[in-house]
Amino acid sequence: MGTYLEKLEAERENESNETQKELSKTWLKEWEPENEEFWKKTGSKIAWKTLTITTLSLILSFASWFMMSVIAVKLPGLGFPFSKDQLFWLVAIPGLAAGFLRIIHTFILPIFGTRHVVTVATLLKLIPAIGIGFAVMDTNTPFWVFVILAITTGFGGGDFSSFMPSTSLFFPKRLKGTALGIQAGIGNFGVSLAQFITPIILSVSIYGTTSVFTSIDAKETQNVLTDSTVEKQKEVFAALDAKTQNKILATVKKPVLDSVIAATKSNDNHEIFSALPLNEKSKAIANANPKLAEKILNKISPKNEAVNKRNIYIQSAAFWYIGFLLVLAFISWFFLKSIPMKASIKEQMDIFKNKHTWYCTITYLMTFGTFAGLSAAFPLMIKYLYGDFPDAPDPLVYAFYGPLIGSASRVAFGFVADKIGGAILTTITGIGILTGAIILITQGLVSPTSMDQFPLFVGVILAMFFFTGIGNAGTFRQFPIIFSENQRQAAGVIGWTAAIAAFGPFIFSKLIGNNLSANGTVNQFFIGLILFTILATSINWWFYNRKGCERPS
Image (cartoon, rainbow, N blue to C red; front, side):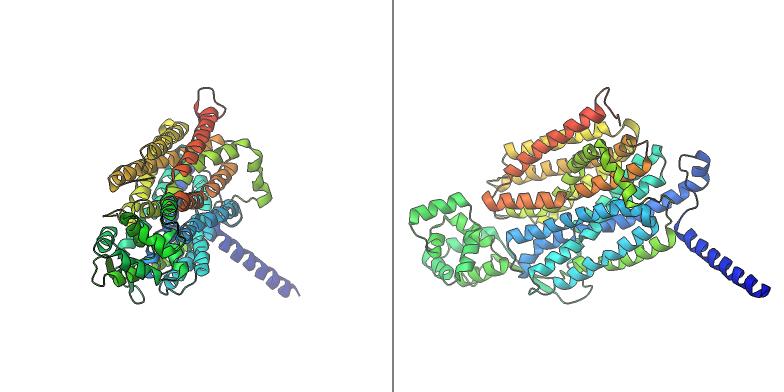
């Protein structure tokens, strides 16, 4: 009997040792970053290793999050029959999904720890990478499938609200601004990476065959119409079904369409189309689905030079993520550990009782919400504001510069925030965004009449990106200071504010898309942005920036 009991006790001890050994792979036994001796001997090495791995993963998170925004621009030229509103929905949905997923990420870090969260989050991004890659190879893929895949790109956007709080916990107060600035800034480079890599990777075969991409030259379209007769144009347009005719006429600005209808006194689409001014007629064709425009132009003039074709591997824009994601998931599992900071979801809800949680949410929505929103909407703004002018620009040639500048300024000003504080940088950001929005409206840059306005439009948008980077660095320096009495709450607020700001792409894309569909400009949207920026900047200045403020930071 004694021998049996001794054997049983030994087995229990072995099981306990195995459990402890397994836990030690995930959870650190102690973590005291404010203890100088601990930091120099142990903490610094672990913290910087963790920052490096999670930042590399965050780059791919942002890149995969904005995957749809760069692919959507190409879909019409491949033959997908999606309308302007549908394309803006595909660009907006990832922001909506990321916002909700970030709320979840806000609360899971203390429960599961850095190691498990980062590894699983990295693997989840394989779903959109593989799914979108196969979907774009078949032009019969229905819109609802793209909607679901757009939702899954939100996995990448959600990561921020657990990765950043994790980093905040690993570093002492004196280095939080620097560490958060590095991680968020370099992570934000993922947006530029997606927009920069896409045009290059389209010529690279990873898997599958090529697709034919069709584009329409607006200047040559006008030449085709100039050299043809109105009777021929009327004949070709009349041969189209009523639904297609309506889609083409819907691209004409409403005041122009109304005046033509009044002049012709006709409700026949082909009569209205043939009576349109030459430049409006050419714009209507050039703005139609490129495959449809190709058919129309070829019937009017079979040997026209308005239709351009090239072979691309559109699926490569999604498939290139797969290998990198697998490698980073492996590294995360074997090299990351978690800080022993346990808290239930109910315990974490105490952040919502603090008014500063809500003030910080507003200021970060101004800074990061504007950064992410402009990142998503910038390519389609270029396409639909300036795309119907002669010598129209390729949106993807310019789109990546904005996120690149915003990411770089976030990294650079993370160091500045540690020196001078974050509140002043957030105030400067508000002034910068406000000035940019005013210039866009007053100079007619978001209701353009010629390509001459395009350089200033791009310059102002890029300047706004620069200021958002400054503000992103400033706000993330502020939050740990504002909530310095409870670092667990500070981490929670970082996650929560990031979650709400992640709705930026949805807000920007949908409102800008609605404005463009209604009147062809985005003046009303930027008027709204001006009003919100004034509110957010005033809150930041009053509570965190002015002399004698409640929480100087």
